[in-house]
Image (cartoon, rainbow, N blue to C red):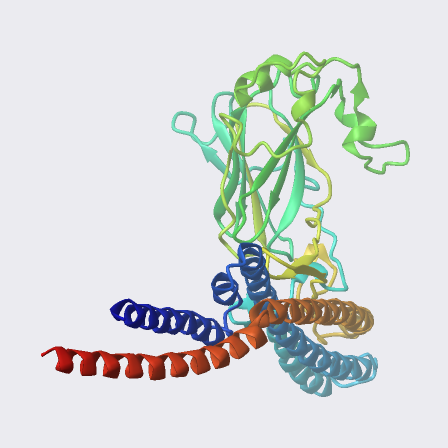
Length: 482
């Protein structure tokens, strides 16, 4: 009899435990991982965890894309404002181009023009959450800069470091030349060809007064007019490590007269030099760069054309931290130097990326607004103005180009919008599919569990009744025996 009572009690306790587990599973349907765990479905639990993490990553991507949409909507508004500003400026320039206009009337037009120009430039400098909305490199009008043009050993030097000869130059005293120019952009690429001689000259490149490139005392084989040029390529930009590339040349044996053709026109250095196939400076640049020869004729063929800014001993580069567009080349020479450069180049304009780098990213076009400068390097690319009929004509031409460029920017912006919106749809679709799978994992077996709970309650109710009867009988027996 007592055994029957114990059996009934154990059965009730066991059913209560099982019901507790079923209720926990049902109460955890908000978590697919916990639901799968209570279902004792290890495969489902793993899948649920993976899908949940993927969805979390997709939602982060969507948040980034939505931020990008806000960013691009702001760009769109500023493009429209800029277009209105440029059109009004061009109207003023058209009026100022009238040659019979009085100077006082021209000044009135110019004052309004300058206010609009300053507003237009300020639009290109606006940031959103500390991120610039526009990149000067993407602006429609490009400016050509010839940085070292006209700079030769015969150019009047700026300073003589002299302690013994009262300002009279002799070999052994250091002369200093500095070529300073506004190159419009705060980033760029410059290829500098140098030929110093065995004494060695120092070439320094500054941005806004801050050094970004320094050769130290750079030596070549012999008389600078008879031997080869070495070539440095320097690329810099705001907040970036300055990149350095080095190229060996077998070009040499030049006479200054060869730099001018029969008509008196200056020709490029490469056209004037003769190539004898021999790298005259090989032992010098290998020593100064701190490299061993790679066995090629130049000794450095395997390293040409790649960034070596962290792989050289003597030549130094420094990060560009100055936003200035003023560039200065400083030359310190004791003897004869030769220098030439290719035209100033803009760095490659890469596509930008938005989204979650751990999940989805989309390419978008960088956009640029007009810099509103003239194209005259001799006047340091001065800002557009209406001081004269000639200035007004230049302004009309430049603003027409900038207005056409706004159309190009709108096209780029539309393309970027489409890419980002498509990415949002893809991410949302992916999340939707994952949620359905998670729902199936979460709800698996819930109907069976609910039915089992119901049956268990009936069983427990019957068992409780039997247990009460059994205990009552046992109490009667006990009373009788006593």
